[in-house]
Amino acid sequence: MNTKNLLVSFLTILAVVAVIATVSATTDELVKPDTTLVMVDGTYVLEGDYTGSTISVVAGESISISVRFTSNVYDSDVTVEADLEGEKVDVRAVSSPFNVEKDSRYKKTLSLRVPYELKDELSNDDLELNIKIDGRDYRTNLDPIYLKVQRPSYNVAIKSVSVSQSVEAGETFPVDIVLKNIGYNDLDDLYVTVSVPEIGIQKSGYFGDLVALECDDNDGNLENYGIDDESTFYRKCNEDDDETVSERLFLDVPYGVMSGAYTLEVSVKNDDTTSNKAVQLIVENDFEDTVFKSGNSLWIVNPTDNVMGYRIVVESPASVSDSVVFVQAGSSETISVNPNTEGEYTFNVNVFSMKGDLIDTLTFSGNADADTDNSETNPIVILTVILAIIFIVLLIVLIVLIGKKPEKSGEFGESYY
Picture (cartoon, rainbow, N blue to C red):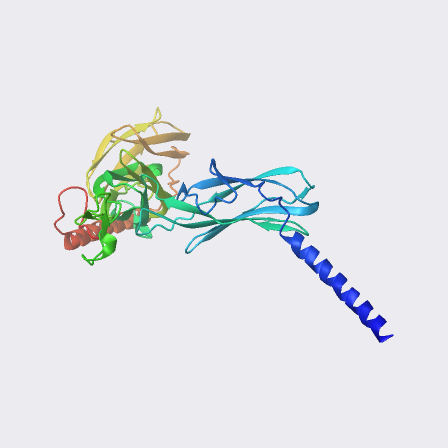
């Protein structure tokens, strides 16, 4: 009896071991051996030759991963997963689930963006691509594929754009820009343009040349040197040049700009590459309106530090005391408006700049027979506004004179690195 029980127990254990062995043998066999074909960004890699292949890709660009295989089993919820494992960043893409049937061939294509981790080198071959084909019951892990990552041939990064949180209308403000060469090759003759298209202001400047790699601060550092095909020791970086530059450009905000948020655009160009960046600029203007009405008088104030000329055009039969007026900086002028009619009247007075731009249109209405003043604006308010404008202009001039320093030739302030 004991022998029989022992025999039954042995057969049971043997059956369990056989089942486990069968499952273990099939777990990693979703893909039939020697049927996998991988294409990385248009280049084929054959199974068994992954570690011996070096495929070059460009940092920051998207690459396609195409996987073809023949299924060794029937399975469901199968996905193809590709992972790029960098030093700091991992990138992953997974296909939608699908079913497979034994001895049938399948193809799936994924897209991955190559991480940009080349800080102090032009290229490296440390990027590992791992591909996994995983189903509900079976799985296959392909051997790693090692990729060589190179910088783009020509590429400049706008590392920062620094500008005041808000600027006043009529103010000259600085824009500080930091550029870095993150391409494979040196960059020659970089020009930078800053602009606010919505208000029509722009300034350009020359930022010079940037090398692809600077030398290490330690002159004896082996990373600064290489050995050519003739076993000659040579310096492989640029000893006296920089890969990063910081400069300043100045923009003038017109006095008549409306308060609000605008887009400041920065464009960096040379013969080989172009880069763009946009930041928000807040403009404040306490004197958006420079033309006022008081009774049958027209008031024009000039908050700028220049003499401004205006043309006054009135609808007939009304007339004005001056059709052309020049307003001194920080001052104002008053123009009399005569309706030249009896009874009720309504007419418009248009104020133009000397260039022909319409500054404002004011409507005058009233009763010529009535001894009343239908003005909507109190003269005291107008005088208060004018005095405030004069004070602000004088204050701005004083601040400019106190803070003004000799500038370098060209468009920039002091350069720093």
